Structures are given as structure tokens and as C-alpha cells.
Amino acid sequence: MSDAFSFVPDPDHSGWMRWELRDPTRFNAFLGPILTRLEGDKALVRMATERRHSNLADSTHGGALLGFMDAALFAAARTFGVLSAGGAVTLDLSAQFIGTSRIGEPIVAEVELLRETGRMLFMRGLVKQDDAILASFSGTVRKSSPRA
Image (cartoon, one colour):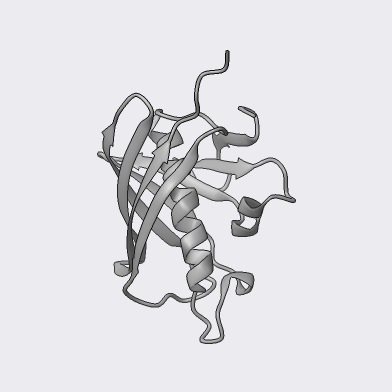
């Protein structure tokens, strides 16, 4: 399962890594390619918004935002170097929706790693478009057990 995601420099966005599920039939593929990079003590996780992510108000649908927040936890963990790919699970994800977005422009999650224990990652973040805050979130990821 460790090769389920690719994590390579993005050819179109200098300084960003492309974190992408290799299997286009899985849910994460709906989000499109995810870009990520470190900026100070935060991981920036970027998603291009498209019509398929929109609600009837032409903003990013709350379900798409929740899916992005969940994926951002894992992309950020990979960017921090504390998780490779596959096998980990989201234990909890709490979100507060604050603003609306413009479809066709990227959104960025600024994710902080608050604490890492042997098996747990505690993170929080803000989803922004430009300088406007769209949502805040926090989540806990449980790393997989080592294989016997």
C-alpha cells in the first residue's frame, strides 16, 4: 500500500510537491491533484477547485471541503515526513465553516502538526482562498500498526 500515492515535484508549480492517489477510481481522485510544500512550521496543501466541487451557490460544496480537509491531514503528514502512505486512518475531524470560496481558484489548507506520539498525529488547520478564511479544522490520524 505504500506506493498508493505518488509524491513528486510538480512540473507546473515550482517548489510544490504533487501528492496524488495513483488509482483514479478511489475517492481522493475526485479532489484532483493535491499540491503541498513546507512553509516554516506549517504544511501548505493546495487544491484546484472545479465545477464538480461546487454547490448551487457556485462555492465549494461543504462535502468537498470536508474531503479536502481530511486529505490535507494526510498530505501534510507526508510533507512533514511523519507518514509515508496508506495504512493510517482518520480518528476524528472537526470543522467549522466560516466563509465561501470562488470556484476556479485554488484553496489552500495551512496545517500545523501539534503533536506526534508513537501512533498518533494531532493536527489543526485553516482553509483559505487568498487571505479569506473558508474553514478551520482539527483532526487526529492514527498511524498503522507495523506489519508482522
